[in-house]
Image 1 (cartoon, rainbow, N blue to C red):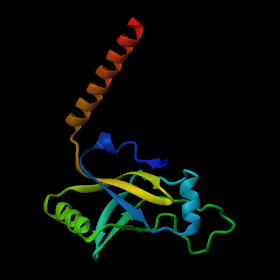
Image 2 (image 1 turned 90 degrees about the horizontal axis):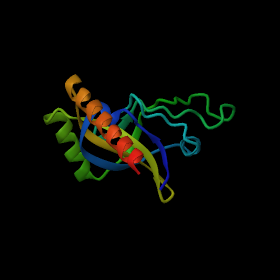
Image 3 (image 1 turned 60 degrees about the vertical axis):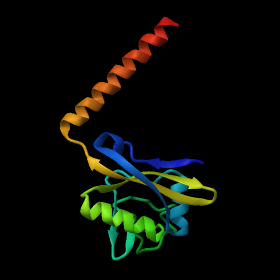
Length: 149
């Protein structure tokens, strides 16, 4: 399973409460571009609109600029494939609980490209400071353990 793209700041900016896996509806040239690792998930989010789940704000540049259709939009909303049960749960959590659905990574499962996204609650500035502090202490502990060997 190869990971093509990740949202690196997602775990820093949000508390991920639950994760989902969804298929993506892509054009052929978008699949080639994703497999080359050109997709960007920063600034993207997942929304439920009209009974569909959409990936909004993700950028997938064209595979070849000369062969790309003229009307191609690299940041168009892309449909995610979820079961009805997952769609209902996601809709309920985002509407009632006030959670945000944040994309975490794009990867392959067999020959299909999947999106891993999570229901998240935004962190406050103090929570981010605690995360930085924990990361620094963990790094210091690893450094001292490595030097003692």
